[in-house]
Length: 195
Image (cartoon, rainbow, N blue to C red; front, side, top):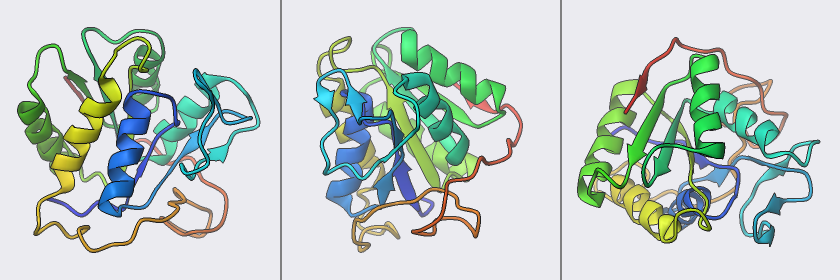
């Protein structure tokens, strides 16, 4: 399994928070962009999630930023992607960024874990954007994503098993993974999406 430098998301309930919770538990640096005011369907996104706010309160603005600053995006759904999940995949295609859609209605958690591991290795993902359905649209999504992401990196031999969790600042003007500076838009690497 390739070393992961960080996990980012937009902080929404469901898949986003499942990814952040897994990162925190495993000691993987986490972060990402969220809407101005830390907006989410359940109110303000908790401060324990170390997210930066966009200038806009809209969800699409943070979705696009997270797609751009990551090396690849995984989108978890129960069934076909809708609303924000569909937008995330559309933006990954638009910017030529690698993506993986995991339909949990068709794949078991074990199969999803193995697929995610293989895709991360195949695409060379160091900064993973975790996205997908919100909890109100897919009850149980947050817990399912937490288990899958955690299992994907929990291997005792994993290079990230001893790292301490902290704020992860995506790409900056001075370089990748630095803790200060403004996130930069990454250049696309060509469409390499998977389902």
